[in-house]
Amino acid sequence: VAIERKTREQVQAGLKDLPGWTLKNEKLYRELKFKNFVQAWGFMTQVAMLAEQMDHHPEWSNVYSRVEINLTTHEADGISQRDLDLAGKIDQVLARMDYS
Amino acid sequence: VAIERKTREQVQAGLKDLPGWTLKNEKLYRELKFKNFVQAWGFMTQVAMLAEQMDHHPEWSNVYSRVEINLTTHEADGISQRDLDLAGKIDQVLARMDYS
Image 1 (cartoon, helix red, strand yellow):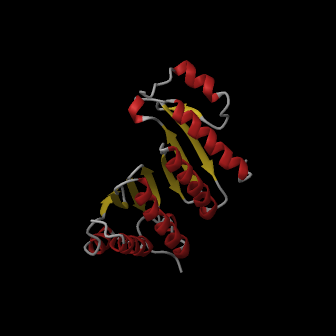
Image 2: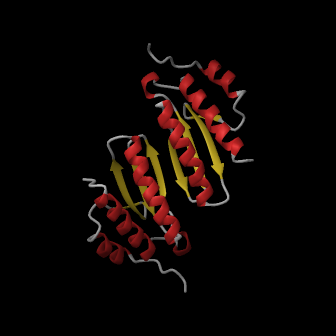
C-alpha cells in the first residue's frame, strides 16, 4: 500500500489536535526549548527510540537546549499520516516530561 | 580567563590535524553518513556525552543516517580551541566506530 500524501486541508484538520505544531515549508514543524542540554538530549533520546520503532524518522536539529523538528514523508513527497502520528507521539513524550 | 577566538590562520593550522573537517560559515563543519539511523544515533549519543562532559556543545542536525555538525564558540564569537578539541574528540569516536 502506497503512503498517501495528505492534502493541505487534511493537514490543517490534523493540526487541530497538535497545538504545538505548525505547517512550515510543507513540513510539520515544532520548535522546543528545554532547561539545558541534558534535558533536550533526554527528550531526543525518547523520540529516537519511538521513531526507530515506528520506522519513521524526524529531520531535526539541536543547539544546546533548543530542538527543532521537521516531519515529512519522502515516499509520499509531503505530509502523511505517519507524520501526524509521530507528532502525536512526540507530544506524549513532552507531556510525560511536564514540558510546557 | 576569556575564551580566545582563533584567527583564520590558526583555524587553518588546526584543520591540518582534522582531515574530515572544513571551515564553513565561520564554523568547523563535518558531514557524516552512517549505515542507518541506529548507527547515526549511536554516534550522536557518544558525542552528546562527551560534549556535556566538556561543557561545549555542537550545533547539529540529523536526517535518518546523516548527521551534520557545526562547531563554534558563542563566548568567543568564532572558533576557539574548544571547537578544535571537540572536533578531535568526535574523530576519536568515529575511529572507535570504524567509520570511514
